[in-house]
Length: 219
Ligand code: ADP
Image (cartoon, rainbow, N blue to C red; front, side, top):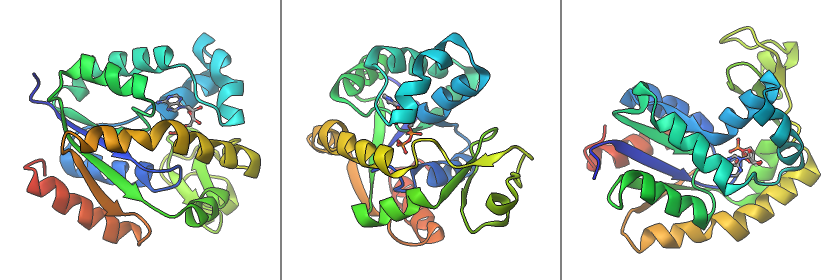
């Protein structure tokens, strides 16, 4: 049993989970927990974990359930996650979904939002995506920060992620269909899933998401 507000975002790579979680995090006052961001920070710091996972991330493959489950458990133990968290990129395999249930108790997840976007659109978005290596802010290749290579939020380097190139994008989308898409059904059986059209503008998607969270008493 938990009274934490745990919100899970499902959706393909490039569906807008990161952008929306950043916005909702400010709105709800709970942290955006992205396993991808945690892993990329480890790679940047060249920690032992980072060195272990660097090539896995660059190829667009998944790191082991065991490792990611431990990272999330440690993240949940931090005080800012006591009131809740927006989970982006976790769980993404059935094994991770089970680990999350073990961690929170079966009624721990308040809502699972599936951000739906067609594959053609996510491929276009990922190819033009640029990110800050320091704070994970997301830009488009046509944004001033992407062209200058300097983040407007923190001054960090803005780069193209090594897995945002065609081969790795294709591999990630395949992995999503195989390992992660079945989680939607897993959570549907518990009546937790709300599907939101992620193909519209970021502002339109944010207002839909806030409406969903309000209905559930979370915003
Ligand atoms: P995307 O969803 O766009 O691929 P993320 O930032 O969520 O981006 O993840 C980047 C990479 O980090 C993944 O391709 C994978 O290698 C690793 N990763 C992130 N979350 C998980 C997870 N829950 N399980 C296994 N690997 C993960």
